Length: 132
Image 1 (cartoon, rainbow, N blue to C red):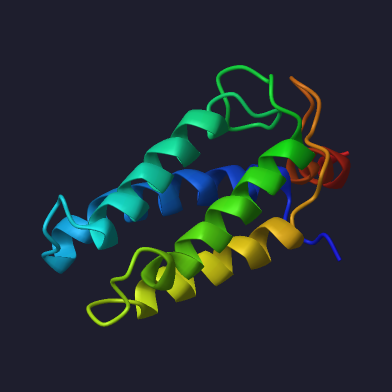
Image 2 (spheres, rainbow, N blue to C red):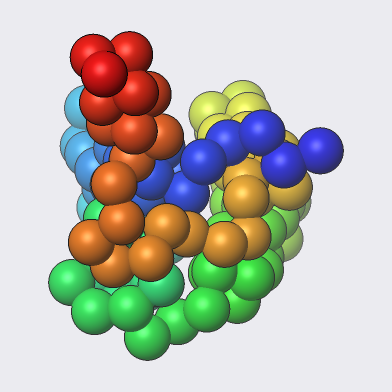
């Protein structure tokens, strides 16, 4: 079931990307260690493809939403598996696994079609109808 609107997904993209970039610094990971490099690279990549996704939170609507969701799922899977793939599970694995699985879950439950450019939001339409 696709419950999450693309507008909310877009907001989550930027919040999670920022978290992925900042969290290794806050956790005190060495910045050249894979437990830091993986989330930082994935966070930067998320910002990059989010800026060009066909949804309300982008600069240019070039990447179709289903492709974006596929990238989110791949990114989430890589993040979730990274402690074992890159050999740092004995130092850190919980945040990588949890955030990665959440990314996959959000991608699986997000709508695949965004509102057209300039289209009013559902809330705006409801407010106008209530005021009539």
